[in-house]
Image (tube, rainbow over the protein chains, first blue to last red):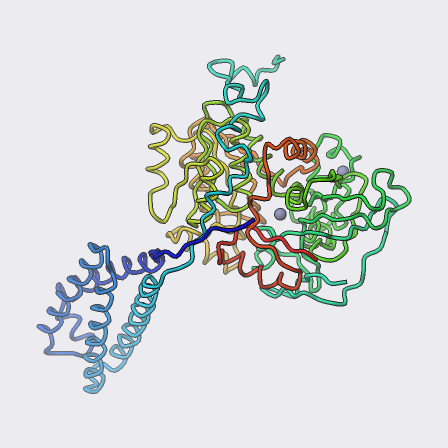
Length: 181
Length: 390
Ligand SMILES: [Zn+2]
Ligand SMILES: [Zn+2]
């Protein structure tokens, strides 16, 4: 049987779901940076960067809200990638200063993992720009006489939808009674 | 002969020098395969979700062809008959077969002791489907030995093509049994999870049986277009909320009949519970991922019926059984008793009520089989059903 097909642009649902999760992650990170910059700064080995962390928090929240509100997540994911670069650079500086070498390298690892997730998401979203071949099986009813005509054909009697069984009321329950016919 | 054989997880090969089968019992027949198909449940073996495969097992349980040789005690078939063979092997004589419960035949599983251990009691032998169900060689091959060939095989009348008859061996009766077990009433809404090959036949069966509303849930657009062609209302769970749409379609009361035509591979929704299942599955603590079952128990109308043609292999976890019990739900399930339905469905095909060939999207040679397992599993290239011609 021949197959009908055409070229279409498709949303990448997996990438879009990932983008939403990254949006929530952004907001979570942002809130943490905004509310407890002092604690974070000393843990990460960035003493004196309290103001900077607050700014980063605002940035994270902005991209997070953007990702959750938009129909076109791609630019927001690129914004996140920019932010990832900033985070990595900042942590790189902290690593050189070496106040909290263990914590800083753990944070670097975490940011690198998130960056990889952002990259994967961006790649997924880029696929949406390429049309894909979509097959249309709308002509494959399987019913040579059409679906509507066949509704109820296997029911008793003449085989129309009116002949399909309809047991209602107490009769339905009585079908389980021991003295059913 | 050539045959598709299992060499390990995700490793199926078309091997060239497989020994030809021969008659082992007087009731046997040898069939030269003219067409065979890849089934969703073959993918459980391909992906290694189903235990009990051994190196070199021949795959395939959906096949048909010409009878080449008949055992001395087989009075039903003769050489040259064109037959389609049910995937369940049944003796026709034990208590279960006598009751029409062919897929739980007590005598056809050669490894009954193994199955007793796993399931409590043995079920029927199946073609090409693990040592647990007898370790019988499958039909994705040039030749197959068919045991109890005086019970199962259905003779195909002249004029009916392979493409029309082939699915009588499994997926058409499977969809049909799933719908019949729902005891469909005229005013029923029947919801089918999964627009794969079995789902497609379940839709057509529910229409033939007279359901007022047939709904199908999936996220593969081309499969949904095929479902609509068969008379179903479709829900794409990537794009809309299943629960809201079902409430809308049933005035908030929920569907009377819910059918799980997905089974073990229901990983489609990337939800929290699907991730939980994936972790447990990786740790071998459960074998199925019952996202669909959970949703069915939740949305079904109280007093309704859940019918499960989808294949499960072992343990399931975190099922809302309280909802199911308190809502008075009825569960119907099982491997298909193919022999119970095949003759009737053959007549319906002859009568022009249905033409099962609609579901075939890919036809290829046996050599292309391993590649098409992948295409089918990944739902690439609009693949719904693959037929191979040995
Ligand atoms: Zn099958
Ligand atoms: Zn039996």
